[in-house]
Image 1 (spheres, rainbow, N blue to C red):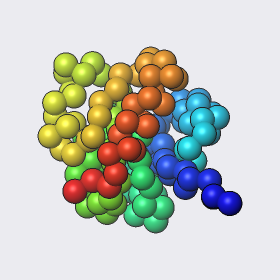
Image 2: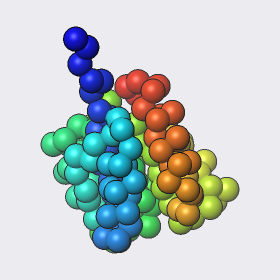
Image 3: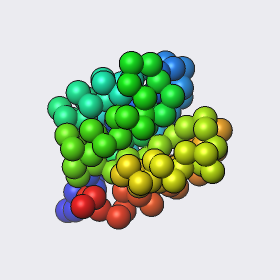
Image 4: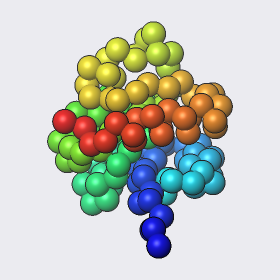
Length: 131
């Protein structure tokens, strides 16, 4: 008897609770993913990433206390095996390059369809641990 594959663990980081709830619903309705934590800003994200060591971190950029761009390199340090997917209201042409330079694996704009979001998460997760 074969066991089910281990689900990909996800940390959701966004300052808006409704968006976190929506993302959690989309991710958890999909086979293969489980949400292991949520954070409202970059400081909480660093703390949660350090304790949960998720496979993926879904990161907003515009947040209070510490924004996503400031948190990105710190997340890479505290959870080096995690892959970071930025999900932002800012256009990719504006901040995508910066986010990728700071260690993001992918950049998506808010408003992307649930199907496209999951497709991108699957693609990033299938690349294996980051190095």
